[in-house]
Amino acid sequence: MEPKQEDLPASDIIPLALPKGTEKLCELCQKRAYLQCARCRVTFYCDKEHQQSDWKGIHERICQLLIPIRTPSLFSMQRAGRIENLLKTKELIEICRLVAESKLSEGKHQQAVPAAQACLRCSVDVYGPNTVQLVPAYLLLADANMGMGNLVLVAELLSQAEWAVLKSPECGHAVHHRLHRSMGCLHTATENFNTALFHFANDIYFASEEYGLENTVTCGGYFLMADVFAKQGKPSVVHSLYTEVAETWHTHLCKLLGDHIQNIQKNPSILEPSFDKGQQVEVDKMLRTILEFEQDDSRKEPTQIALVAHSLAMLSFIGGDSSKALGFGRTALQASQLIPNHDLTEPIRALLQLVSTDPQLTAG
Image (cartoon, rainbow, N blue to C red; front, side, top):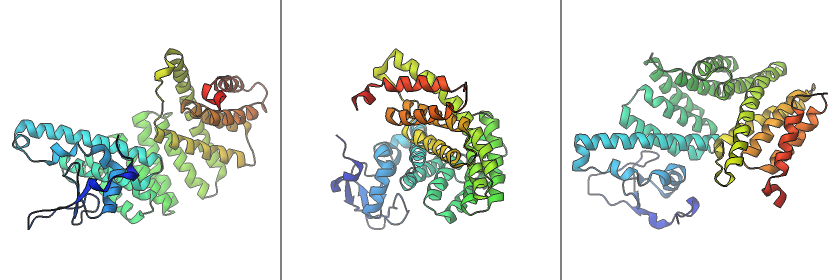
């Protein structure tokens, strides 16, 4: 059984013994290393703290994968060996990207840094410096540092990403959308609101070109734009943008719920969640923000409250939390009943009935 991250034994890190005149660099900070991972022996650290941070952030996932990539051999110098290492490094980039994205969506910004750094380092190895293929890694690292408040470093990383994009006119819509979204978040944090709105408008445009106007990725730009207008004290604009986000997610979650119910009926014992944990946390946070805004709004529109609460109930049920689904479902039903013949009343009741038959809830 693998040890827990916080209980990594001291035997897994050993002092670095190198021939005189040779030097290794720390995996995280690139300063001189004095310690070595005892498992792979190809990864080095300046101190125990950086070793633990890297282990929790990404190294536990990729420790053994690094051995053939970082160990020179006669085979690795031949054409077949170089191709094999290239494919392994690309696989490593994808693993690091997914881990960093997952940790960011869960709000674990500091833990996302090692994965984002490894993603960038491997991308440089494969594609070379200052290429557009590095942009996703720059943005991951920028988002991680944004969450920690390192705005100067964020600005530097986004400048590097922007320069790489400017040099590549063939760059796709998805990269442009992600760059503008990160730029918008930086300018929101530094209270340059007009510039932030400019970037979020571009974010929405490029996302809609790539994914479609009514896609959940695109509506993320509307949500971030609403945050800027909220800071500017423009609640009517915020309400309008939140309506767009709420309707998009409600439509998407209704479809996911239908698929989820079909899967339950087919084979409940091997049911796979429709969201990973990180995605669910991110969507839950977004929808809760909208629900709180609508409940605090002087107009208190029951239609909007019912829509968002129903979305949160569906999200909770799909994610396996029947207790939360029941709470949000009741909020949704109460709001829908304030409007005669409301379209959502029956779907909400059907969901509550489904939730009430959940074995976990009844057992509790």
